[in-house]
Length: 217
View 1 (cartoon, helix red, strand yellow):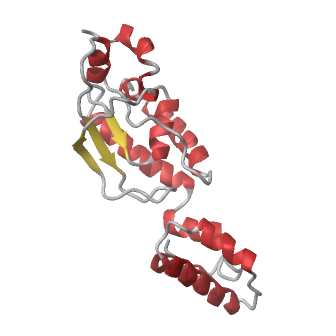
View 2 (tube, rainbow, N blue to C red; view 1 turned 45 degrees about the horizontal axis):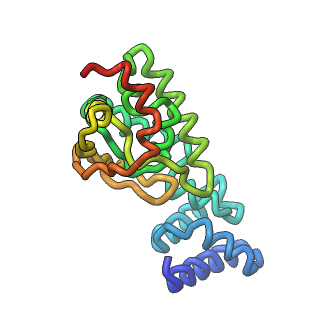
């Protein structure tokens, strides 16, 4: 946010708390502005209006988490939406193409589950269990205040083979999320936009030796 936008958010929160007859301190405003820093003030105003009109929770002053939940949904909802994007990519892109998701939580979650190639080996019988594992892991990272570290891409079979033969890394498929993630990114889902691979991403190559025995030349 710009300084002007932060001031606008502080004013919105102040007006809301006045409605409840609650005092507003600088510390409270700092907490709200910090927690909502990457959201648009107009969206924040709409979320506060929804909270005030809510017959269940609207009788209490909102907390920052209430506004985030109104803007993004619960972490479980986010995880389920993210899994829908991942499952579509598994089916339509497959294991041979390296991919990158714009949601850092998706990237880290797939890495924790063994990487892109392994995830693409999923069977229909395993699908419900892997979906549950993904959502659980995703929620753990999404509940944090900062995005997790992750590699620039998730390696596919073609890139793994190229690396083993000293060849340049191929292009990567960029996949953008359908919804807004915990960390403020995500638009309409796109599966198939190409970007150049980052050949200097050593983190993404660190498990290459464990992958190569499973790959056909």
